[in-house]
Length: 328
Ligand code: 2P0
Image (cartoon, protein in one colour):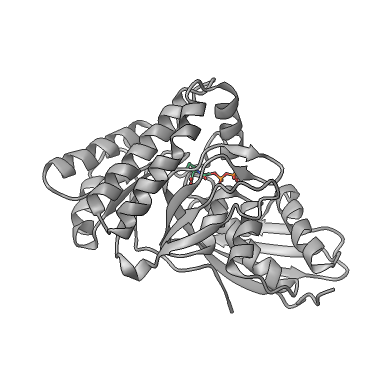
């Protein structure tokens, strides 16, 4: 039995965006992905999470951004940590995102990565990053990637117990500086959560099997582009994976339309910049925000162009971020 730290532990994890997208599960209980994915971790978007296991507390309590949240998903996650630590103590979780929650900016990625780091440490456990990634995956698939900074690959894995479905770093943030401009087109929470969206696609899209079958060649090509620091190859593959994901979503019944008019306008603006010789590519997750990838020298031009797009409310700029870690 380990000794929980009643004073609490705080951890920070950064959000990430996938360059090669994850969509679909091969096992819902262990949250095993049907496909691997490759992402970049974002310095400017993060979650700080404080966890304290408090003897005498009757039930877990969760506050996100100062508001009481439903504990179901978090208690199930804390049960994994409690089982590993051999404790039964309930916990208080306090979490803050420095960006809009649940709007396609991967708050579940940074949130569950920060929770995995803080909760294990608060429970008295010391886990290697790979074990933290396996644990974070069981909170949210994309959270497995946010354990690491820079360029990260999440392996689909082949085992039934999920121990090989973990992320690992491909390249440090400092080894290939990139800027991500996030064009925010909506501040509200999105209509359809990703877990339900993935189930719908697997059950009803005629394109789903093709999506799963073509994942490995996309991953191999992206690995090669990153190893070669080939911006054009990386950008073309990222845009392709994004549009293929949204093709899959659109072909689901009922069709999943995550875009609004400004999302589409921002995609065209990125392509217009490219036609003018600016190296920039877009990617979009399960939400209406557009993320534009460019070398840092072009960040000003790209941000200014996106801010002129009707319906873009604001832009956020980010470099690539670090590993998830505890902090005081
Ligand atoms: C990704 N997304 O690779 C893809 C692209 C959204 C679109 O991973 O059910 O919140 O918790 O494992 O990680 C969002 O899904 O889903 C996601 P669960 P998650 O980033």
